[in-house]
Image 1: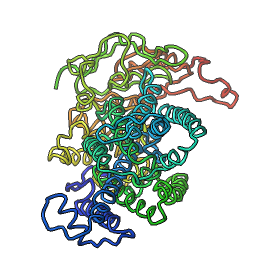
Image 2: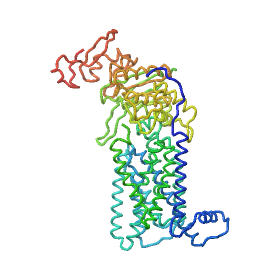
Image 3: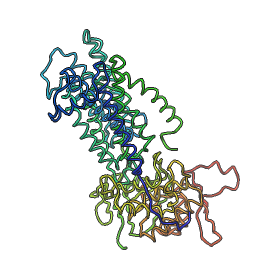
Image 4: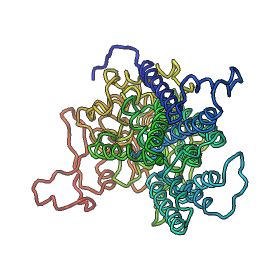
Length: 356
Length: 281
């Protein structure tokens, strides 16, 4: 406690080296995973053809030297599927990081306050409706109702949890649990009466990228990118929230307003992702924690890194799902994620995540 | 540095719970001039912490008027308040994974003008805050590896990083031993000189308060029942009534008269608890 201390430059935040390494490695992983996922499969398309097909479709340059079936497989099937995996994985991981900070709960994931249950209800209802409405923007009714259902569920949870003095985090969690249970019960009733559509319903609920298309990617990608950009711009406020709501208010945050904005943005990214892929679990829980372990908790680095690693992880998991005979990717992420979740649970019991 | 830092005029405030409204402040008046150092004393539940939160703008008063640096507090945004008023909490769980300088930089949340970085002004404010809080040597330490005294230095630095004009301290010495408690109050007194800070602090320790604070306000049932220099505000009868406890006056080696809780001569006297004030003194 000496009164005179040597004056020197303080440094803080992730170092440029760590930032470059974390983001660079993440970007490489995404590219490698995407390339592998486009090439892997029984039709034996080489990397040269695949690149030429993509370049040709994007720019019109180059002679066509490949069979049209190869072009269909690369351009219409695999590439949209890979891009959908990237977009959904990135969105879920980013939303998970935000919910973990906002709720100050290491076990929070993007689905914790209702979007998955709401989206499931919307999607299953659409699957079982006898009508097939014309799509909008190339989307089916399933995707639209899932998206709307996800957002609506979060809005209901937030409204229920909101009291005169604000929206306490515990109330938000409990309301999320209650509303999710209620919506899941409704989904269960529909499953019970699904009849011949049961397979489609189960497949959606387990989460799958098999139905990916350019239209679906084109729907979810802009929403997730916009949501991510606006969330990243709030990195300073997300960090401040880690001090607890009372101190966050003292250092300048309008905490209630911040909660509304963060929940809305994270719910937007989550619902957009769930709408095109079904409920894929564990990506949004696991990835932010892995990134935190490697790169620290500063949201300035945590959010972009979570997006990259979330994208890579889901593309790889989907590749695994395809290799395993086309099981839903949600099963693969659960197989990877559940053991990690248990490890995390043990760690937080030991006091590893929360200080003191 | 003249003028009024904060002025409260007939302020009423309380909490709304399931059992209806519980009013904690009952028409409280208080004026603190720029550069003053005031200690708020009073029993648990007398309204000290509520008063501090009202001054920090985190509890809205149900009646009365508050002026912060000459402007109605209600017209200040959260960010504006944070650039003028800092709150030092009793304790705070610091988020794991950050180093001390990074947590102190969080005090710049309301200042940060850059989208993805810090301005030279931010960096300077953090350095000055660490230095003035005697925490420069802690800058690179992980926040989870601090002792209680070190943690309190970091919290002081976090508050100073806001470059406040008014510092509110909520029972800042509760978790500190007597040496660290004395350091903290000496630091506040020093910062008052150094930065022209105005300091309002909730304290529990009458001896510390009378030793370090030139002005003491005693709260009882949501009112200020005494306000002045320690020898006036901490008279035996005022302390006895405010805390509902027997007190006695002791004279220090230096000749200061201090009011302290009555120390019973025998164990049998321990039976009388708070509230059953048999007057001594």
